[in-house]
Length: 395
Length: 138
Image 1 (cartoon, rainbow over the protein chains, first blue to last red):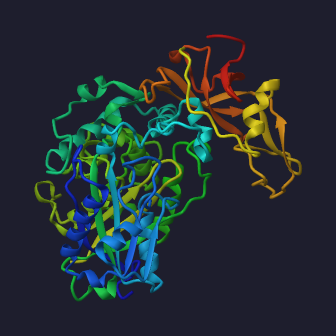
Image 2 (cartoon, rainbow over the protein chains, first blue to last red; image 1 turned 180 degrees about the vertical axis):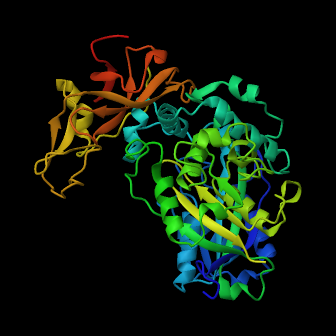
Image 3 (cartoon, rainbow over the protein chains, first blue to last red; image 1 turned 120 degrees about the vertical axis):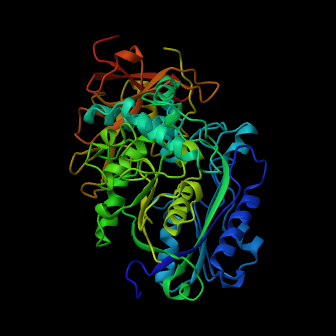
């Protein structure tokens, strides 16, 4: 750990084609992303000795997960010293957090991390991964406390948080329109984004309601796609990686109760715990952040992350995103510069990670944020899932 | 409000009192025999004092709306919108809350802080604890 931080870097990034109804298997998408990441890193396949993914090979319904550890290990013919796949982690970025921990512990040197979804193709086959209970049968586990009352979608769970935020802080749909329209404008510069037509504030306000106060444009878009990154020990990456991205700090804490409806403060949730831990693990502060890639499975979750990370005051995320000027690509805090999940598509946290790395390396093409961004925060998860990474450029 | 028919819970020894207490008109909630706190979802140990003396006891079944959402989208063929999902804070314990569906109330009349009382609806072997405004329809 000569350079401080976590002692780990992201030495390569890769992404598959991203789109709706691509009609490809999850493993095919995963291989495309993995081989791209491998080529980007300059590593040889034989250098990979770790594998990490979220949520692993089994999901609630087809499409939610595209490949597991076993699939990828076998497909790539890897000799693994360490591997992990599972969903009981601090959100989707738990796969990265685990990989960094493994590298720190000396269990692996180069860990291929991936997240694959093919929800768009799976949806056309009749079932929806995001609707709990759509497979028929009775519900077990924590879903039983929500689903029997009709709260079958995360849109409902997030809607409950949004109503509370509106109630406590006077947040409005008009304010959130600033977030949705800004991300749509960002998506127009991202060749992989699925929704690129310009969106006006009126378009947003007139959109049909899904789970009030959340409308269609407050919900992200199911897509097919895979993202892969390679987490490497800093020392080992020195010799080959052209532009490694330093993982300066991570936030993996969970203090509150692990339920969407039981967390004591319904306007902060696990994001608060992960963010608090993140800032304890670094000397950097919220003022050092140049760009933010914050989970937007639902718009309200981005507001919650903005507040949790101290990028604006508690309860002030509504005014902060209002009008969109602060969070625009040219604004004081460029946010979800690839269009986020709301407009680019639900790559489930890993799209945000990929975008942060591309921006820090200055390879984000037409949507590159000017001024050589140096520090990025990436956060993923909603409800009781939350994990955050602080990344820095190491040029 | 149309009848909503959502997937039912799979009954097990731990959750059966909660899901079937409605047969006798009781909202049964796990309660600690040692520190007397109420805990939901039901658990075999008290997270406040770690006592394992946990018993389902009839709660007041009364409380107030902490937050809610009006679902407008049809997710499943058996679930016609609109319906109101709410998180209810029960009077029995400051930290005792549960998610439910509100009935006998117009969706646009629901407010945070609204007083509600439990009202059971039997579906197969489950008595769903739904909530309606205290003192009748709004």
